Length: 309
Image 1 (cartoon, one colour):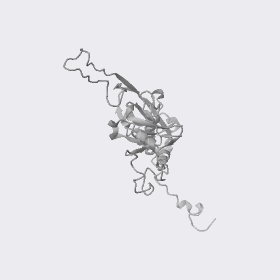
Image 2: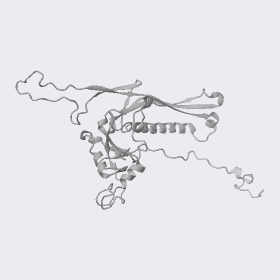
Image 3: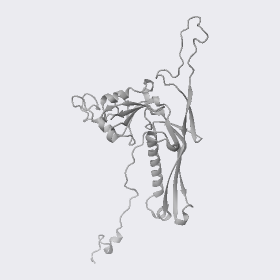
Image 4: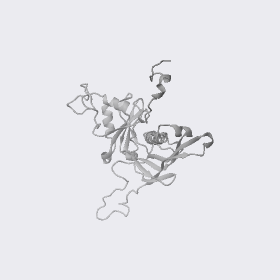
């Protein structure tokens, strides 16, 4: 044993210089959640919400089939000016219950130098925020789960599909076709939705015939000297990790007014600490619960970009 008092050896004094523990954890940042803030959020007091609607799909100009007829001073008949009556329908948006839970020993809660319970509650909030964004985009609709925007592109009462490229790739002309697809009355709230790492990168690398980057700050630069523009063809882009990548018959870009999607909230996230359920095993249970549903209710506000095979 060394006769020098030093912290390098426990027996020589190292026990007197313990390691300092910081009141924080090293961990990844969660992916940003931006989509749920764009949609229409409505509360409900029941297990489903009925949304009345006018059924009209003839064009994007009128809202119903009602039209005026020129009849002259004396109509030819009492029915000459009868308009086509509006047709009504409804959407049903069911509500699903979601739960998540963890178990932790009492000893861990008592002895941990780190505030474990508040940290767990933050992770629950984070998980639910990500869940909502994912369900709005990709919800399966199975067993009362939300119907995502991409559940059945081009189907009945679902957003129409616009080709945005060829052979699994996005083209500038394809993006312009998607830009002009929504009716102009929704222009003030239109925006793009795509993932950042793959789709936005592919668009950012698009070049013109003179090998200049297209998604640039203007004609005075080559698209490298300045940061990525906050506007794509005049409308803001929003990024979500839950959007698919470009590929054969995929849907990597959505463009439109995302108020078309209704997120129906029955009960927001609640977190309970259950002290008795696992008391005999020296544990507590942390239980999270919420109820929500959703679907596209105004498909004409949104268009889905497809990269064909």
